Image 1 (cartoon, rainbow, N blue to C red):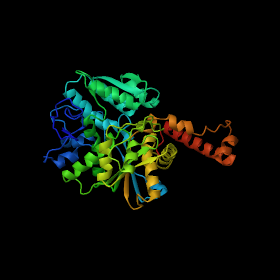
Image 2 (cartoon, rainbow, N blue to C red; image 1 turned 180 degrees about the vertical axis):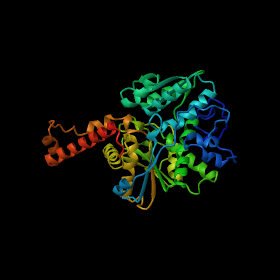
Image 3 (cartoon, one colour; image 1 turned 135 degrees about the vertical axis):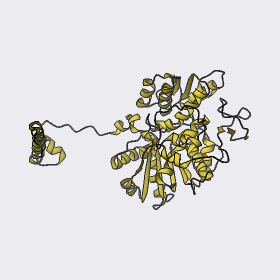
Length: 429
């Protein structure tokens, strides 16, 4: 582990989150060479642990896993046409065991916690982190404590943490207040092992999303777009891309585009102003609860990812996010939480501005399932259409002639019952 500020190094087997000298974040650096049997690698199932040689966990260590990774990379042709693109794919991280990308980091982080002899783990969370940590802690037999901002967490995410037996602690404040509490607690001797994205092992697991994209496409796209809150994921994506190039597994590095919600956008504001620091947002507000963060821990590395890759950090409004969520669900059958839909909204905005060309190959990483945050969708949903239990009433709302509805029903009924009768008689057709 190496400090990103002063470059001081520490061993992998220390319980450390920041540099003991300067307080800078720690990053795990790969060695100069690796002995990888790619035939053996590709024989493994697609998922986080396919890439074990590129993860800082010894071969002898038993991993804590729920089958994370291996998520779909969906070719979204209808949506691409709607946005003015020739090629758009969605890497849907909502297909992970607890419904979000956090599982990639937790499998590595909780494995490390067990190796270090921890008997408990903790995090601050807007929802997805708490759900994931609670599940992996349960799998490992560890006690789990999660700090959540009071009244600022989606019910579906909180329900997961409760079901997995975590101790839920509500902080009378926002996510940044909860994060401040757990970081301070982590400094105390014998405290629970901290598994927010300040933990360098979390980043290691999350970087595997780009390893998978590279394997699924047999190349890397021109642009990778992802939501940005605390900025751990954009940090992980950038680290993974650099490692692919470092080890000769990819020829080019895509442009990285991060998307923030307009009223929770300290990193985007700094990027647009050309600043080398961020001005925290005191009271971040957005329907995208997973990225409702005003003082992100990984802001410096997020700015570096965008600038060094030739990418950018953009903002979108809540209205644009919700429109994009409906568009992705209605055109491609992929239901994601609002934070994830910010990527689709961001691509639409950047295509309109000319910052993304129609002929560029774009991959959007959607980070969480829509089933985790249903309140935002239902608040804007039209009420169900009520009908009487008659063919005429149904035909009216469907825009059909009553006779057509009746004929279709009778045909389906007779076909089903005729098949049953033939089967009961033992007749072979």
